[in-house]
Length: 218
Image 1 (cartoon, one colour):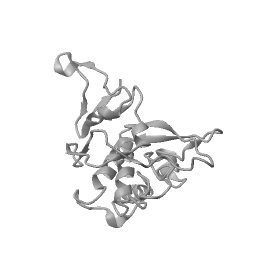
Image 2 (cartoon, rainbow, N blue to C red):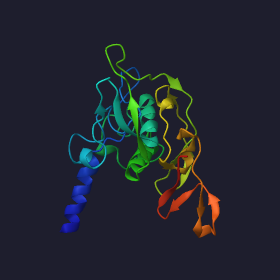
Image 3 (cartoon, rainbow, N blue to C red):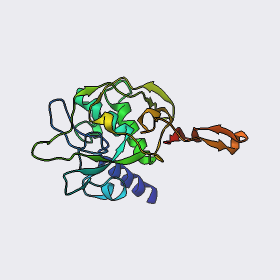
Image 4 (cartoon, one colour):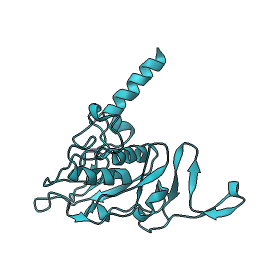
C-alpha cells in the first residue's frame, strides 16, 4: 500500500512540473531559457516550487534571478519553432511516451535530468520595464551540445538554434554540466582533477553508474 501511495505521489509531483517555457514564435517572453514557465519557476507555487525551482527573485531594478539549465535553454528554443512540441504549452500527460522523433522530446528530457541532477545555475534576466518587456528572441547559432537517449548515452547532436538572449546565458565556475555541454561554461573549460580510480590520471570528466558523465566549469 505504501508503495502505491508513493507512486501516486511521484506521478502527481511530476505532473506539476514545467521544465521549459511555453513561448512560441512572435510572443513576448521574460526569463527565456530559465527552468519553468517564464519567470514563474517549475511548478505552481506548490510542492514543486518548494522542492526544486521557485518563482524568480524579482529585484527593485527590474531584474529577475532564476535557475537555468542547458535543457531548459534548449527546450525553450525548441518550443519557439514547435509550439505543439512535448510540454511546450505546459505539462500534457497525453504527450508522455512520445518517441524521440517527436519535437522537443529530447530537449524536455535533458531539462528534466539537468534539474534532477543539480546541473543548473542561477542567472540574472532583464531588467524588465516599460521599454523592455521581453528578452531578445532573435535567432542565433546554437552552441554545440548533445542530447541523451534517456539511458545516459549522449548520442544526439542538438540540431536547433538558440536566441540572442540565451547565447548570453553561461554557467559560472563550479557549475556541474553534462560532459557534452562545456561550450556553455563561461570559461569554455572544465576543471581537471586526478582520478584515483585511474591511478591518478588527470581528467576533466566525472562519472557515476546510471548517470551521464559530467564536468565542472572552470
